[in-house]
Each structure stands twice: as C-alpha cells, then as structure tokens.
Length: 238
Image (cartoon, rainbow, N blue to C red; front, side, top):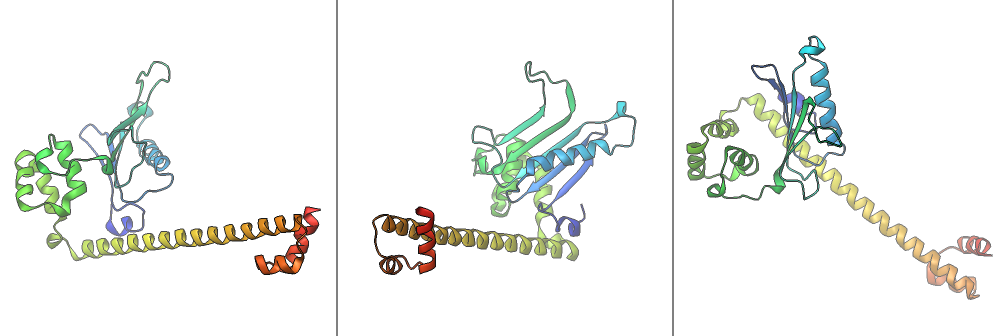
C-alpha cells in the first residue's frame, strides 16, 4: 500500500497480494493494541473474498496474516496461531476459503540467533530484533535463510527514497503523538478517579456524622462540604 495512505492508518503496512493460483494474502503489521482488531481482521478478509471478480464457484482462498507487536490472545495460545472455520462438534474443516494467522511477537521468546531453528523463527526474530541485529548475526541468518537478508536490505534507510523516508518519519511521529495522547487520557482518568473517590469519602463521613447527630458546622469543618450539600444529605438520610 502507498506509504502516504498507510500513514493515515493504525497499522504501518498493509499488503494485499496473490499467488500463482490466485489465492489472496493480506498482511497486517500491527504496532499497537487496537480495540476490535480481531473483528477488523475478519472484515478485511471478507472484503478481499467478496471483491473477487469471478463466479462464486471460482472464488479463491483468502489468508489474513497479522504480525502484532502486542499480545492479542490469552497466554495459552502460542505465539503463532492459525484460525479457520470448523464444525463445532466434529472439528471438521469444510469451509476452507478463509484462514487467519496471528503472530504475537511478545510471546516469541528466542532472542539469540543461535536459538533459531526454522525460517519462520528467523522471520519472527527479524520482526522483533531487526534494528538490533549485528553484521555477524545477519551473516548467520543469511546463510540459513537468504530471503531474509533481502528484508534486512529493505530496512536500510540509506536505500530509501525521500518519499518513503518522509512517510516513515511522519508515521513514527504519529505513533509518538498517539502514545502521548493515550498517556494523558490515562492520567486524566486516574486523577478523575481520585477526585471522585475523595468526594465519595467525604459524603460517607458526613452521613456517618449526621447519623451521630453531629452539628452541621462541625461537619463542614471536617469534610469541606458546603452547608447546602450537608442539608441535602440530611434530607436524603431521613
């Protein structure tokens, strides 16, 4: 997808491609926990499936592949999980045209090149540790999986066009802005919660003092509530 379009989305890169048999592949790079992401995955797959210009008998399979920098599913789900439509009782796989693959990078625990045992693991290492990979580690990876060396080359900003570099830098700034906005919202919510908690505490103290026939002036001094607020509590209590 064009970088300028991608920079307007919650994900950095969307790729839609097809193989020699016509099967569609959607690849989504998810860098932040997106509420409803699982539903969006199904929507994207459904759109790619329905937009095929052919008779329904000729419809090709659609694979949605998500590479996520956040945990999406419970811990018992492995770092790579495959989801398909199956019969509830028999687990039979009869509706085969939609498949979803989620790669949850936080669950991928291998952090050293020597630990990698397959091309899939080397790809996961690439997505998680590309910026930290040394030349020596890259040489070892390239020996086992030459295709991944090309991916490292694509990440080399020295080979990017000015347009791609600007789009990337703008997206990084957008992500930082989004993180700052979220942090501020959390701070505001926390402060609001503390304020509400203190107000409720004062009301409960005032109610207890009213129940013990403490005079209003004393309650005002102890709770900082106004006389009218205390009188209102008194009317509600009795």
